[in-house]
Length: 354
Image (cartoon, rainbow, N blue to C red; front, side, top):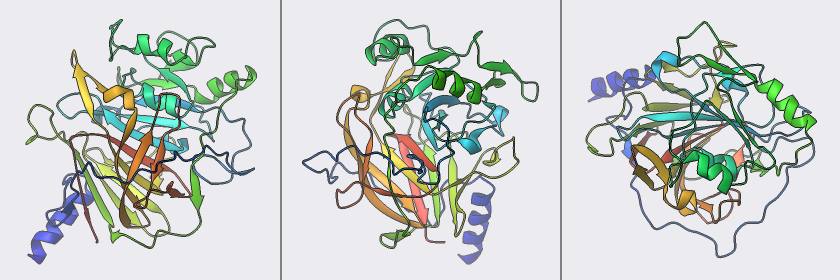
């Protein structure tokens, strides 16, 4: 048995084994604690980043959300070390996913590879009051998967709060990866442009604490797999990831492409918080969207400081901020640093105390 555990842990560290043979699988339940009164919005303390809780960069706050490649051909990604929050969202019914970067403090000269928009991304941009930049969209004009329709519905057109990077400004094709994985966004240039427009943004701040989480179950290794929607017995290797908690550093993510690093710096990207957001996904014409475009509430599996608690998420309406709650129903206090949020319904999550 000891030999089996050692072998499996080695595979996890290589990003090959997505679920530990000894790991505890988290069940999904409709029973989550939601407060009767929605937590009030609040601003970040002066000098503090609203999305990381760290000292802010002094730049004007212009949240920018980018769809980012999640295929092996596009890794390692670049500029993602500057993202305050990274999301992983459904893309294909075979369990394929896309990453989404939210820049809200530091803005890299370049980030990518940027990919096309989906309705599994746009509700997040709306929830974080973010500008949305993307590389085209599906050619669908109406319905719940039409990005074109919902850009209007969410108020992204007047004034313009969205930027297509296909053939426009604030982008270039780089040579170090192949097309279509090579579109690079000039994030700093776009940020400067937005700042000059003097657009107003709600900072949608998280609450932060300097105290490590000291309750819940130990969860040093966290494994995530996306299931095939038509055949749940199958999972997508491209979407699988393992988060390993390193004291003093945070959670380091490995997957099929190896450790998540920023190509620009060559350094691993650590996360102080990892959250699994259980949200119902529906499909139309092969494209995903969230039931009622992510309005509602549901289970959230929260990992901080090498521990696990089961909480909830709350998003009453399109224009509201997305709130995460702890196991008591109070607004979650985040650990200072970057956050990785995994969204979907058919997700297998397991954790191990070592």
